[in-house]
Length: 318
Image (cartoon, rainbow, N blue to C red; front, side):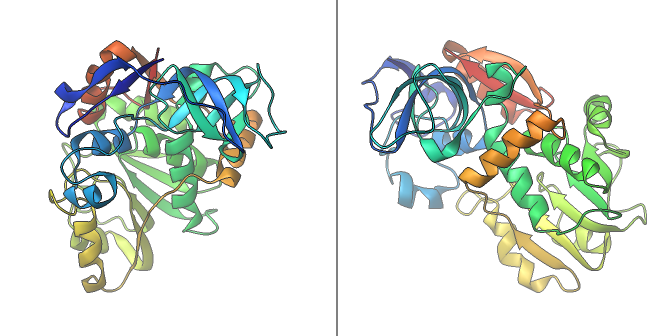
């Protein structure tokens, strides 16, 4: 099969499309014929090997495994022993192993049927960003009546947090570029702050909670913009140091008094994929897929993600 791989750490120039072995059916797993695969910052981290601390798990000098990709949508090609929830030919989406390939292996527990009326590209744009959004909002408890600020609101995770928070009764302030203001308002944002022209922490407004997925401002600034006893959730950020990355901020959190600071470490869970499928089917959530690249142009897709070129989510197709 064809797959997007890298054999060394580096920028997007290390990406290659190569022929690799097909995945074999394994107990409890499903082989999916990939129609589309999501593009996330997780892939950039795995490609670049940064923060370098992660290399303790992925390989110190070079990657232990060349393949990339986690979000998947496609058609079940085969099922392993013990799988009864899916059959060959089913349309599925969820989290997989090495999904930037024409075939990908996934745990049956991390897949769901694609909701009716949804394309496979739209479905592939949901899993990782969607479950990260769910897990971030879960830390806040009841949202009705709360004021919530979301940085990176025009990106992948942010675009799902905006929708879910607004639907669940929060007053949502989206912090994003001016070019994405209409996009986030269409998702349910009540107020929009252009971070390029306005410091979201300097206007005197205070929020019950801040979900920071951009990392452009220091913790002390967000403390001033959060009510006493409020919550600051630290999500992904590409502005940290080369060794620790976004964990740089988390190490400073104990020295920031007066608010609750949570470092989010999102993980794929079957119950969250199921909740996303239900939210998509009910209309509580919609896919924010906005751009598609082919495997041969995976480098351009990652560069576009890093540059925040597109609103919402990017996907790759074979």
